[in-house]
Image 1 (cartoon, rainbow, N blue to C red):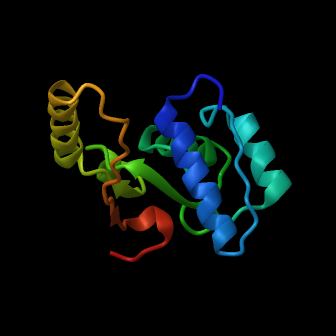
Image 2 (cartoon, one colour):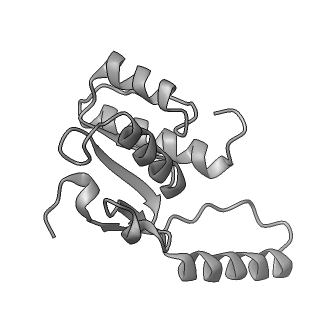
Length: 143
């Protein structure tokens, strides 16, 4: 994914692996969600039930583009983001999202840094932390 943070690339890879494991068709599209013409071309080409976005900002931009196209959220298309930014619940259709454990991420980073200082030859580590699904109306849920 050009010009994307490594976290976006990893999120796309995780999404792809999950949908393939579930027996669904893998589909990842990269483009500007604020470009309603591009979004419209995706809707026309795929007739999607929903979108999973790499982050909440992308999901918010997608909502605006779909709104400009007259597409009803969540009636026609459902949307899910990742991050649970502070404004996610304030969007015109509150956004379903994955909440990152920001405090735990910071604590793990500090712990790993201290371990690396104490043991400079230690091999690289990967730490996986659990996210929490925050269900709101953009996914079709009724709150």
